[in-house]
Image (cartoon, rainbow over all chains, first blue to last red; front, top):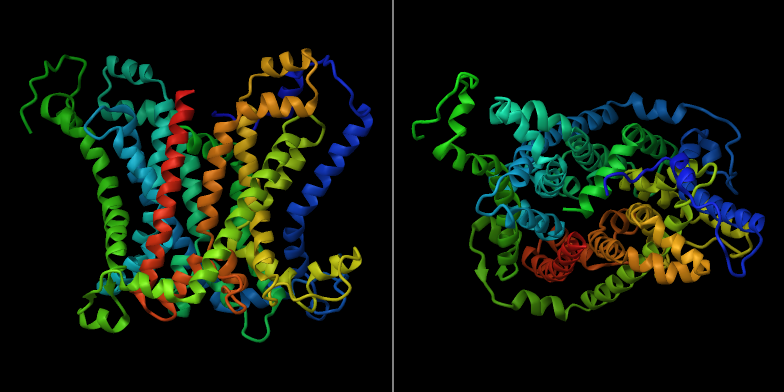
Length: 299
Length: 315
């Protein structure tokens, strides 16, 4: 369960060579069919993304030209300049960044210790607590929304980025703990025992032996939190009221006008919001895919 | 802390963490480690959920919040919700929305996983491309689709005109007959790659020897799929189904940012309805009543999910 992205070359080596078949289409036809289907799926998946980039680099008059052309006639950075010249976008990005860093650090610290203890130690609740955590993840945000609103109002934290941190923890932390526990239980017990025999204290064994072994899992969890905090919209749009405290997704949705919308600028904002996520994802693709797939499905 | 009576041998250096090595310290230590997580979860999940369910039985509005005089009203909020014709519409829409999403995402996800689960030149390229919708932030994706659906210069209309499916531009999001389905298409586009990933992971766990044995016995592709592959990945398939269900019920961004449940509530689901009750009319009691009903449905789904995970661990 822990490797999802197997390299194609490995697959080839282990693929069966001779396969007896009942009636089937000739091989070249089948290969062609597979490739055609793959191309259709590929275009379907990538087209909206392409269209976002294509719109973002079009000159203003071309965006509203009828009929729209698939390939931009001229390329310009005007939309990006318009977006970045105003101080608003930078402020939104800073807000998002601050929030993301804070939530990520807090949830990783808390979930590493809890996940480790749940995976390694038998204590009262070491079986039920993880399940309880998983339940916590499944609570519908709309049910939490109202009590959060009442509490934040009561504490005077409405319309504050700091008030969003506990709110985000509610929807990140349970799954983080659950995933961390999964990763820590994959590290062999014998390693820690060996370290302890060699005279490490618990802390040293944890810090020097277990933690490095579980690093891919920690990276996966941290990235998962980062991506979700960066993208979060529902809570931010409900609890953030003033313009200056908006996060990026909120700022983007705010660019939709009541009567007219400058889609070029909006799409430029979309590209810039998606860019860090895409970057992180393609750098860490392997770890992430195995982490989310492996950790989420297996205990 | 009791005094540690550990025979601190010459190897064990004195460190502050020694108090956790034996006796009371060793017993308390795992609890200390899970304590922060438990405190946070109780504070930001358990307590809010309980107070959210309580709210459903009180008459909570902005006015009573300010004066602090919310009254217990029993099932009145629920009665008021059931009496609202929009609630019935939203329930039907939720059903359509969930069924369409789950069926399409699982079907397409399985097909894609089977396609991508083979050794072919360039398969990595296709796999990365097909994962793009999953990676793009949901707000960005939804806004892009909204732009593509634009009634006058949207590319969706243009492509459908070129293919000869339409003969004039159609306002996909502005027509009560199509708004829910137009949003569903976006949601399927966004959700399918994740299902594909889960199923691809499962397919890679199917022992090669079983497939070879089936081929040796002369099983055709379809029969192999039906009798060998699907039974092997059934647990992962069921997990993917439950996860898709939960994610679809909770998918707020797609509907809210494309149509806000409109026009004329034609794309309203229970989630957006509860949101409107709560944060447009500030009738928090009524909103909590809808949320509580959703919650019960999700708890049932979650229970099924956990049972499936345990079945998987038992395999």
